[in-house]
Length: 180
Picture 1 (cartoon, rainbow, N blue to C red):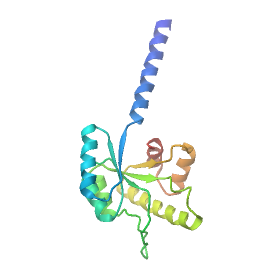
Picture 2: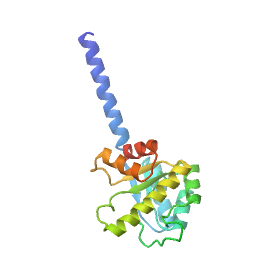
Picture 3: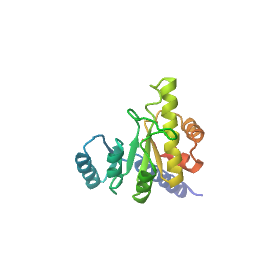
Picture 4: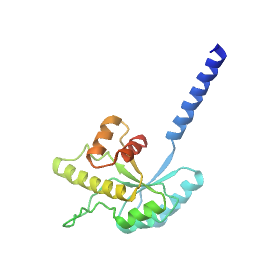
């Protein structure tokens, strides 16, 4: 190879890396409100600006109304406070109806990992159990999962944690690659 061919290859490689970095560093609008009309307005505004709309999950009715909107990109489940478990199932805020809506409207489910550090053992076990239930539901309905507040953790450790929580390999790879 001559010097010109090597230089062209090097320039193409640099351009490819810049394109990949711009693709993964997308801007997003985190919507954290309990008012459904205010959330819809913020979703519309984010959609018009061309940025991702990420809505923090609240109660079941709010989540259903959000998942019916096709302009939402991610529904983020992070805080499970105030949820009471039933006899055979944990109340994680996600059920089969919401999963069908998410699948039909191509909305990913977000898992927030900022809560893991601050929990005591009993509360952490409850939190991880709810995460496991959400992972099982997302696997059953083939819904994409993304991670939040996991940027400072090692990707291999995150992958291992997700695999131990019951996430399939392909979904775990996608989740680790798509962290915010």
